[in-house]
Length: 447
Image (cartoon, rainbow, N blue to C red; front, side, top):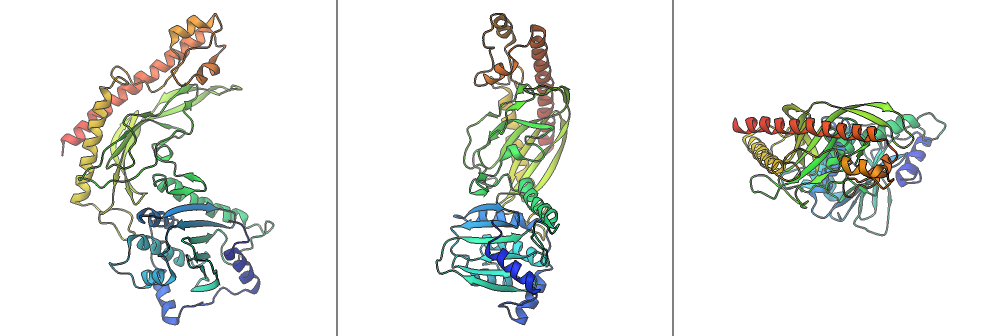
């Protein structure tokens, strides 16, 4: 959002006049209510971002677009004409069991922002009414004559009184706060459905998971999608996609083991753990030596599109398992995020693990993994060597001919070493996959 937004213009005017303490449209009694609301706390300072995303996901029609800029981060909700000022004020000051779930999430976010008294923010209602938080209450800034179905929450990156001039020296602090907000989204909201967007892009999905996704030491290689079940609530995930299938000089394509469904009760995926050292710098691509490492499998609990809890399965292998389950409907702690331990939670966990085990066994017996996991794709060494002398295009795994172009010109010993390394890695990870299944069997059998 540009620096000429209504919130930014008001902040500039208020800063020049030194006035940030107006109670706005609220009475003294309402001000006391705000002070009470300000005591509300989440698990970390930027966790209000999670509640904003949950407000969109739990709404049946809403879409959410997040627009970060230098001065503020803007959360734009569409198709929420019912989010009026009276409705929101009542949900904030007089919450009850009849308050719709989306507004419950949204009001938690606003309560936390109220508690951060030094942080300006504004609320733009669908009817055109615009309110800005002054540090002690709301002040009406303007009213548009053109009602829409858009609700906008704008949160400033600069604190009250901070100059937004490029020469003031406060830009780094504002950029650091914006990065904290974006990190909260990346780490907790990457599994939100497609109607939640950061800029013009949808959430990253499983590939962007900070612990088991595509990272410096992890790479997913297979995703399983379960059908809907009455034993666990269903949820929507964005379709898995790869940002870069290449891992050094190898191809690690994401295998869609079962067709992607729009909705399911259990989603599981496999990832490899590794470390790497640069062997040689190359103009086309750095050459690495890969060393399989071990990591922990996890159960990922999501509630209204947000990751609210991670539980380690205490299984350390070269191949890791991620199991995504819904926490919807489970009793939570005071933050409304983390689910409490309960019999229902235990039942969902055991159901999810048993389904994941069934999927892994079926995958083990499939043609893709019957003899050896083919995680690292590459040359068919026999045809590659035979065609090298004639200068023909090297044979590669179907669909990845680019790999042949990358390694054209390698000597026969290099090609043999390349294929030997590929086979070594696949063999090690095949063994890790078998050990993972055995440990998961023991875990499920103990129940």
